[in-house]
Amino acid sequence: MMGPMIGRVAAALLVLTGAAAAWAGNTLVAAGQRVAVAKSALTVAPASEWNRLGARPGRQTETWTLDGDPLNDLTFYGGIETGRPLFREVAKRTKPLPHFSSTMLLTDLPALFEQSYRIALDTPLVTIDASEPASFLGEKAVRFRYGFTRQGEEVKRQGEAVAAIVGGRLYMITFEAPSIHFFGRDIGRVRDLVASARLGA
Amino acid sequence: MIRAGIAALLAGLALAGAPVRAGAASGAGALPPYAGLYQPSTVDERGLWMKADEYERQLRDSAFVIRDAALNAYVRGVFCRTVGPDRCAAVRLYVMRVPQFNATMMPNGALQIWSGLLLRVRSEAELAGILGHEFAHFERRHGLGRLRHGRVMTDIASWAGVLGGVSGLVVQTQAIGSIFTHSRADESEADLLGARYGAAAGYDARALPAIWMRLMDEADATALGRRQRSHRYDRVSFFASHPTSAQRAADLRAAAAALPPGGESGDQRLVGAIAPWRSAFLEDQLKLNDFEGTDVLLRQIAEAGWSEDLLFARAELYRGRGHPRDLVAAADLYRQAIGLNAGHPESWRGLGLALLRGGQVDEGRQALRHYLAARPDAADASMLAALLT
Image 1 (cartoon, each protein chain N blue to C red):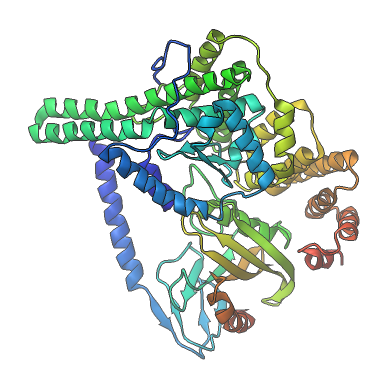
Image 2 (tube, rainbow over the protein chains, first blue to last red; image 1 turned 180 degrees about the horizontal axis):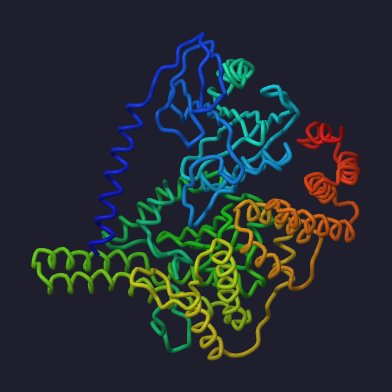
């Protein structure tokens, strides 16, 4: 009986310290300056202020928000390598995430994203609503709209993403927010920000 | 969140859990008499129902409930036939879009059945046994029994902790273990009662053990694919809320042998009722990233023959994994699906993408043109068109 209890206490402490560290890491992103994101060569020039969250979804990802990530979540994926999931595994033993591969077609990227969300968020209510060709970081890219609802929360969210494979690595920017009010309010400035994205300063 | 909270609150009323104790409801015979519209009586039971009512209010409006009238009418019809019209009237039934095998019953008579279960049952007789199992939890008031037993046992464990020492630890262990033993006994009782409901309604109870055998095969494949060990022959663990699948299959086989032989399976009716939803349920399964388990499941479903939707699903599975050899296998499977029905546009799409990714550009583009001609308004039409040049 003691083993699991000690484990639980340790896990709780870890979560606490992790949360504290993440909290401490939140920073303001100033408007009008080009900044590097997701510990990668990807840079963007925001026209307005954003909050950069200290807690990152994965090693090569980074999330920005305006009012808190449940309300507006802008996530940068800065060069995911072949054989890696899009973000940190949620339960590797029982529900491992699919891995990116540089041999994927552009049409495989929305499917990879959808599957990752279904598994990580534990919901079959994830849809790719439309996808179209686009240009991103000077490469052929795919832009897609998506929607999802999480179990036990029931908030309908909407999202838009653009993804490209550059030098065998996946670069992607996603934005998602509740369909009611928030998505429509912020998608314009997000599109401007995405248009400013490039590799390198 | 809700699921986790309620799962803890109403623990043990699910059909499947982790992996028994047999014979709690031994003595095959008459079904328990039904008391009519039941209302909770004691403080405990009223409290339990109040919480369940609150949860059900949220459940009723959930986006995860499948509201298709025909599917709901079918499942309800099987349920009413199984337990009879009086008992049926006491239960609200929710078909949930959750791609795993499970069904749950709340103490107030709210029954959830998951889409992953509907994909995996083979006949109406199997479905009847499962619905009967869930109703047995309600009829025998297992939720209440578990609440009370759990409270007494955790009290004992707490006092034993005050006592301390080795003897205290022994008493604690036994008290906690008793909670799970009690839960497993309830599940076994519900399994056997479910079989009896089904048999009384004219279903073949001999169909029931096969469900658990198939689930074990699928679980073995999933484990193998994830480089884990099989749990098939595990003994029941200390914390198991349910008997092992092997034990359940064995108990159900023995129970079926004791029931009068005969009864129908109703497999064609079940297949017909699920048909409009099968593609959607298969798609949910494919996106779980469980290659080996899904492959076994597809082969199980295809025992009666490979239809175009099953061939397409298997092709998508292989294309999704995407090794060079998988792309070759996928292209072959798409072609088989097209062979059965040349007008299946999604197979042309998959074939085109598999060939393109496998480096067969011209043939791939040709297949995609087929798809775009059939589905010019597809949500990804412009993206696919961009792959043609």
